[in-house]
Image 1 (cartoon, rainbow, N blue to C red):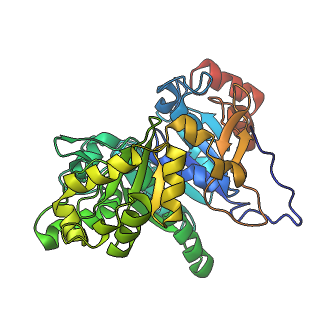
Image 2 (cartoon, helix red, strand yellow):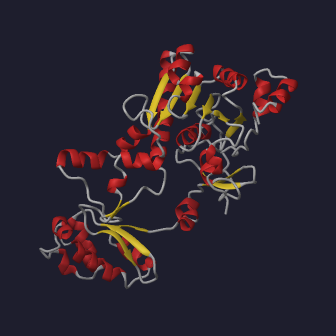
Image 3 (cartoon, rainbow, N blue to C red):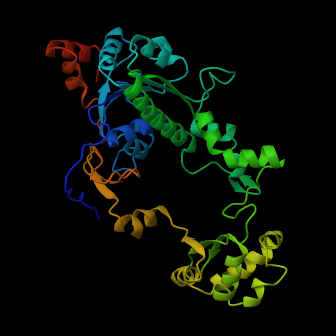
Length: 405
């Protein structure tokens, strides 16, 4: 069920209204960053290839015929389909950048520089411009020219080494490296906008997927560098806390719980396991002992929860003040009662009609995020070309010659 936007007593402008962003972007990292800017009111002009556009458009057809990645990362943008290898197409983009506040690109290493669209070149010509280069591994170093897809960067950053089971490392089920880079690019733009507001100067912003994800790896990195050994892969369990796992219930569901201290263990033993003596039993009374006997600890918890339905288990755990959750699949997340109660669902337009979408997690009371439509390839090309002074005849010629779509 979709939720209409709540009425605003006194509508406030979105914080980025009036800003223009031009993005030569593809896949996830840059599009995800610029979508955040669009949600906050910025005008985002997405530059795509005429022959198919952003290749994320072709990843799948799961969203009523559209690619789910593309739908997720590209709402609220204008699509300009133009061939940057043709000087006429490149000139159109240069004219748009000349009137923009922010430029973002995540082309293959060196491609933007060859076009004169790298951050250093653009900012040298326009000190007020904020220009963002997003790359896999950064502009220098031995990995600078290495191909960088999300899974590969997850491996290089060590995320895969700590994710999975003792016998099997696995990648994250979401594009964690892309998302990390996208969010640091987004926050880097906001920081640069603040700096420009005080100094009048924008400047380059550099983001690498490896460096972004390596920052997210801070806990296991410090654990390894200073403690000598990396955290073990433990699936849904925790390397140094027990009980901390997902346990099957009588109705086929799984309930997760986490006991963070020995007081909570005593409450769990008394109110959930109904074995209060375990709370003070030397074999289980401390987290160190429970972790050392993880198998036996999990067996005790599993036996108790296995006699209950998920609802009964959650009710008993919450009554005892034990942190817990359901292991939900994505159909269940789409109907999550908390998201529904907080009216987090909206509709956005698309080439195939309205699509359900979540509000962005940044909530600014008194404003409603823009949540513009997902653009068709080249949907705004003619309007943007007219905006930079192209006549109907010139536009027709560019289309005939394959410069635009």
